[in-house]
Every structure is written in C-alpha cells, then in structure tokens.
Length: 252
Image (cartoon, rainbow, N blue to C red; front, side):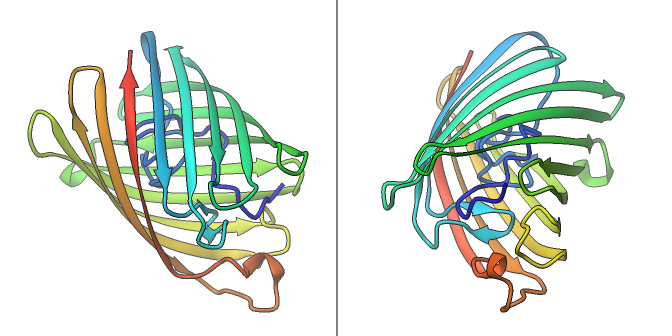
C-alpha cells in the first residue's frame, strides 16, 4: 500500500544503523525508520527519537513539505531482530506505526537479510503488510559498502527496489561521518506512479558519541526525481527536494 506520507521502510529491511533513522544508510535512506539489520551474537538494543524536516518515501516528499517526529525501538539477538517505529507529523493529522521482524545471515563480507513489516495508519484506519530482502557487501575498494534492497507491498501488489553505495568515515573516536548515493526504481509499489527509474539521492550524515550509550545524529539529503510523469497522480510528490533531520539514540 502506498500512503502519500509513507517512507521507505524497507520492510524493516533495515534496522537502526547509521542513525537509526537513518540514516542508516546503510544507509541508503538517511531518514529511514530503521538502519540496516545486523546479526548480533548478544542481545542488543537501540532506542531512537528524532525529527525529520520532510518525510522522504520512495523518492517522494510524502507530506508535501511537512515535518515528522519519529521514535523507534530495536532489539536484536543472534540472527533475529524485532523493531517498532512510530512517526507523527506536528503539521497535519498523520500517524504511522511499523512493527517488524527480520532474519540476517553473514557470509564473509556479505550480509543477507529477510524481513516482514506490518504498517498501520491510525489517522485514516489503513494498514498494509510488506516483505523485503536485500544484502550489504562491505570491504570494497576505499572501504565502500554496496547495498541492494527490494520490498513488496501486499496492498499495492508491487515492488520497490533500491541500490546504494556508501562509506563510513571515522573522524575521531567519538565522531563518524556517513556518505551515500542511492538509486531507486518503482515496480508497481507506487501503484499510480510511473514504473522504472524513480529517483537518485545523495545523503550525508554524522554521529557523535556523547557517552558509550548515548549518541547524537544529524543528516541531510538531496533527492532528484527521475522520469516524473505529470499525468500520474502517484508522481505528484516526486520532486527535487532537500531535507534533513536530527536524532538522539540510546544503545544498550
């Protein structure tokens, strides 16, 4: 189901990494509800609260320029992970809840994952279920990481896919920078939008560790729309736009 204000929750394909919102990028999406999922040998968890200047979803300015407050909790153990994400706009009547489960497996420098996400939109009573899969390939030249994700909406009956190339740059023991470029394609996921090449996004972010458990994140991204069809209602929000966000994360 494509909700005008929904973000690419790649089906939990991702779970709090770069910034837990983002920016995970693994982060292809600098403001995703969750960062890329990782396998944990021990029980680990993250709690994240943040603010997004715009809600970027499938390359679209999903709330037409309005902002979004977000909060998330993620628990991971061994190859399993579960997460809860909630977003609410202070500028309009819009709320979104995501409940996710995922399984991850490491094979050398490659990490594979499979996830399921249930989405609910209390403001209009709608809901959807998504499944997704993907992989991350690290250890490339210049310490780059290549990621690929695809997720399927049962409501829309379509797919959305993204590939990204990113790098994590340690500046000090406390400060880490993140940079990534992403390319997305629509395959019926945005049912009333055009199919094919959808958008390109460039994302920059930083994470500063205040203590061993607490960190502050900030990110900014620019989205370029590709092949926008002015006659397709689903492409109304597919525009060029700049957005960013701030977050606070607690790890345990």
